Image (tube, rainbow, N blue to C red):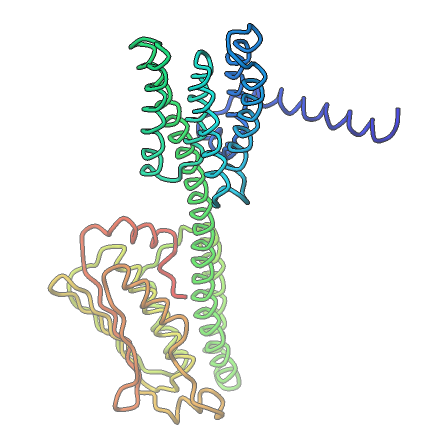
Amino acid sequence: MPLHDTKDHDTGRADACARRAWWRKDRTFEEEIEHLKGPDGGALVPWLLMAIGPGTDILKGQVGHPWVAGAGLAVFCVLYVATIRTAFHDRWRTGLVPARLLAALAAVTLALAIGFGGNFLLLFVLVSLGVGSVARSRRHLGLMLMPLSASAGVIASLHHDGFWGTASLAYGTFLSGLVVSVIITLFHAVAQLKATRQELARSAVAQERLRFSRDLHDLLGHTLSVIVVKAEAARRLAPRDMDAALVQVADIEGVGRQALTEIREAVTGYREGSLSTELDRARSALTAADIEVVVKESGPPLPPHTEALLGWVVREGVTNVVRHSGATQAGIELATSGGRARLVISDNGSPARRAAAAGGTAVQTRVGTGLRGLTERLAAAGGSLEYGPEASGGFRVTAALPVEEEAPAEVAADVAAGEGAPA
C-alpha cells in the first residue's frame, strides 16, 4: 500500500474512533456546552431532501414542461446550498451576498410554485430556513417571514389546496424560519457565555497573581526592613554589649521564622492579619531603629476584617518610617468612635534626615505601590487612606474605616484570601 494511502487510512480510522468515543461519553449538559461548536449551516443542507417531492412530480409527469421544471428545481437546489453556506461563512455572512442569494431563491420558488403547484409548494419551507439563517435581527426576520408565509398561503389557495392545506403551509413556512433563527440566537448566546467564562477565568488568575504579589511585597518588604534594622543594631551593640546584641540576633531569628510561616500562609491564601500583632512588631522594629514610638489605643474592640485591614496599614506605614523617614520619633494612634475606626501613623522626619537615611544622595519619595494598593483596598471596604508630608517636615498616614458587625461579602473574601495586602 502506498505511503499516502496508509496515512489516509490511519486518519480515517482515528476519526472513526473519535466519533465512537464521543458517542460513548456520558457528558453533562455543561460539558456538552463547552465542546459545542458554532453553527456552520451543515445541519440545514440535509433539509434539501424535501426537493424529492417536486422531483417525484416531474418524474411521474404530473407537471407540464418537465424540462423547465427540472431546470428550475436544479437552480433552486444550487441557490439554497449557496444561501446557507454564505449565511454562515465568516467572509460572506456580514455582507450582501447571502441576502441577494436569498432574494434569487425566493424568486425561483415563487415562479416554480405558481407555475407547477403540487409538491413545489414545499419549497417555501426551505426558503424559510434560508430566511432564518440570513436574518440578523428580529425586525428583519419578521419583515421577511411574514410576506413569505402570506405568499405561500395565497399560492396554495390558488392551486385549490383547501383551507387546512393553505393554513398548514403558511404556518409551517413561518415556524421553520422562526425556529432556525431561535437556534442560531441560542448558539450565539452560548458562544458569548463561553467567552465570558474564559474571561472570568483569566480575571481570576490575574486577581490571584495580584493577591500574591501584594502579599510578597508586604511580607518581604517589611520583614527584610526589620531584619536589616536589627542586624545593624546587633552590629553596633556587639563591641560593647554582647548580651544586648544577642537579643537582637534572637529577634532576627524570630522575625525570620515568622516570615517563613506568613509566606507559607500567603501561598495557600489563608493569611489573616492581626492588629495587635502588627502593633507589637511595629514597637520592636521602631525601637531597634532607635526611633522613639508612642502607641495610643482607644475605643471598643474592632471586628476581625477591620483589624486585618488596619494591620496592613500599620505594617506598611511603619516599614516606610523605618526605611525612608530618618525620624527620631513616631506615633501610632488608633481611635474608634461613631461607627468608624481612625488610625494615624506619624513621624518627625525631615527632608534632610530622609536624605541621610537614603545615603545622603537624594530625598526619597515615600509614596510607593504599597500606599497606593492600600488606598484601593480601603476604598473597596468603604474607607479611605490619606498620606503626605506635614508642615513641620514629618509624614502622616491616616486610615479611616467603617466599623460594622459583619463585613461585606466581597471584602470578607478579599481579607480571607490575603487580598488586604498592599500592592
